Length: 437
Image 1 (cartoon, rainbow, N blue to C red):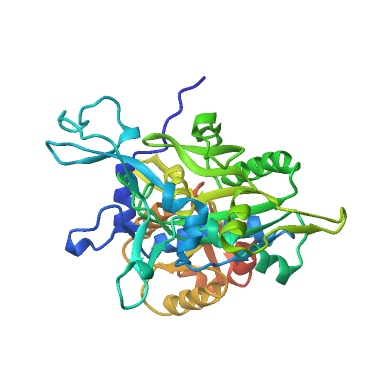
Image 2: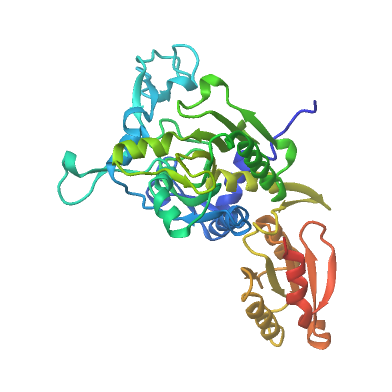
């Protein structure tokens, strides 16, 4: 088997992200805050495009899926029912010498991996962020920042079922922020304490769950390939029995070969009927399903594809990064899928003078009706091409002096660098055909 290599180094992506406005260190002017990141002008467009591509695939293109946006703050009994208050913890050890903290299951031996010092005994550390609702800080006012979006779907199962009249199998999809007080966050945006999830809870009749689980595995794996991830850097890994959560009948991870090695992009679990039954027990409300065809009540099983929007965005950035020789220089290009690229096109007038500027601005105004585009009139045209290559813009539209005479522009393709003369009147139609997916 050929050796698998990471697309690039994390250092190069971190540098590019800062330099071109994809991702910044949070609170940087105060020295930053560990594992917290801010998405810049290009980063927010890229991440939004990742989320939109996910919503299109799992909601818009299906007739058995609906969306939800549940509250981040929920009744604390939700987390008792889900088991998070009692069991959502990691084993923690401290180094007695350098005072660093580590997850006990992430190190080998009984010595500090940083300084070789002696480690404390392992103890459990709950990962939920606790806060208080209202003006009084007492036990009655305790609430938690949600550690996952899934529970917001489960507690709304009956609301969605009643309001939509969906029939099994059907799913509820949600994108939202979650918070986990990780002991050892790191690797840029891969593991952070504040992150965004793209989660599906797909409700099925017991007995059909294993077949439908396999269908979701194939669909979710293919989604990453369709959006440009190199298939050799993707794999499907089944959880061993000792890895499974106590409620899970089975679970697979879609893993990507990051610079630090194989790591999870998305988990797809068969959660059985655990969550709905627990919420029925703790709330006293019925969360079962009446099957009109068989005239029976039962609690559905749940298949859960759970992806990270931040991890996905990072993987798409990494996999799109290329360095190519270009005469005596190296051309850095982000070959992002056209659906994900922050800007779909850039308008580049050869001069800052009229009448070129007026023509270029009219083109920009027209294209902005449909896509995010950039306008760049600074420095030589070759330098501008390189800037757009580095941020992943699929097409550059050059407005030159000939454009005034023939009412046409030169369109340059990012990946091939091929150039084509297109009439201005046909430019929008041309780009619609090129950007369609």
